[in-house]
Length: 602
Ligand SMILES: [Zn+2]
Image 1 (cartoon, rainbow, N blue to C red):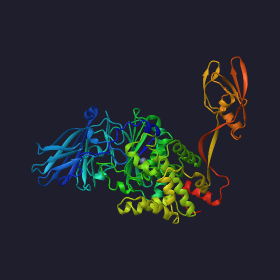
Image 2 (cartoon, protein in one colour; image 1 turned 90 degrees about the vertical axis):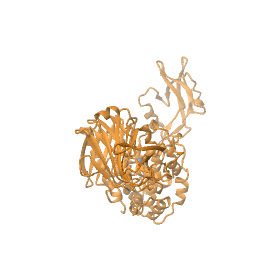
Image 3 (spheres, rainbow, N blue to C red; image 1 turned 180 degrees about the vertical axis):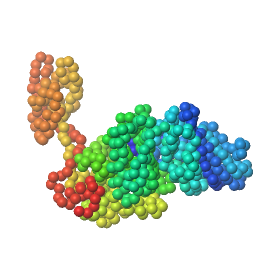
Image 4 (cartoon, protein in one colour; image 1 turned 90 degrees about the horizontal axis):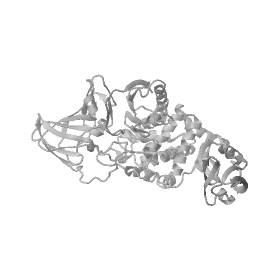
């Protein structure tokens, strides 16, 4: 998942609810087979913001069938309880009503009474614009499988299922599901796949292109929202960011990939939710074609390897009824975000300077937040902490990936990189049908770095809260931090018809020490007129390199007089920037170049 900052602040999700009283997870359903789901969404349904869902299956014996609806969608790490939008539940066999009751808030117990073929039906209210929930418009539906596809409690989820979509003949259907032969009929070989392939149903733009020898489909709602040069730019970004990601793992894991994008002015910010062969983006209009857009695509598509396939052991397999916290979410999300930046620079969406800018932005974001260990931030996300660290594992995890990449390259003479860790774990964990543990992770990092131990690094920066060691690690990649100093007077001012008047003075500030008073009109500071359009730039140019405490003349108008007060220069720390170090040696330059180009060796 990826959220823009404004979305992170203005999130509209329902409150997290992580303690599940009265769980039905202990009850075991009678086995079911021949599972089929019918989803009906016509113009009439669209007007009512409703979806009609029917599930049919067969069972043997008379034991109750216990069906549950997921509480969350993998990738959206919060409990949403999709059952809240379900209404008008019925269970029938040959048109005859069957007895049923509820075992808990998202679990239904049906008594077959000897019936072999059972049909369960309900209506689903689709009124929430969120990439993990169902959302209807008069000509459109976003539907996630987790919203509506019931599963048998306590039974294996490795069952095949068919889905048929019933909709208007001139409306489209887009999904990552495989066609089952007939039109608008799809199949999945496991429940995990079934609920990982959301649907667009209705009127939307759709086109496709070959990228890395596979089909990419680009579905955008509403029709006409992303056209001509903006659509061309989106395609250009997709074609640039995907190949560098393929190069990390050495294989494309999908036959076709569908980018599903909704643009709507009621949505604040931009948000993406990943799946194994698709992702769903929801954007407010100003994000379309923005600099954030390629970053969002690159992030979500990288997830098709990292988290949808290579996944922390705590989430293997997915359990849909309860939270699955992992201390490794910084790898799944943060390192995905590092690779989004790498895909942008390796694919040519941004240049080296742009990449350093993206990285510096993350450093500034982390410096502004309360110190929190990456492991803790990973676990915390399920309760959405309100202290400003809720999504800090994205930028901070990304920076941890950057540090590890540099250290691995340094320890291996640039023969190996973080790419080897990702590719190695993809083979040793995912391809072996399991998740990876913290021990797997650090062993892989250490192996890539010629056996170097990362225990101290882990203790200080991943399990610990120490500030990241930029001063020692960046030089290994021929880079350095540059932090601007901004001359600061220490006053708040207001413009009035007579000029710029001082309102407040910070204690101990340059202005306070010079004797500036509230009500003074500022005339000039260090001979630079305060009404100069270029005031800030001129101050930085004249004093940026001066020493703290150097004399600074402050000219003010007080009553009828103009006074020159004797102040001293003070600085406030400005934004951090990253820049190439001109004195970098050949090895450091090779490492820097290797990161930017996705290369190892000389
Ligand atoms: Zn993500």
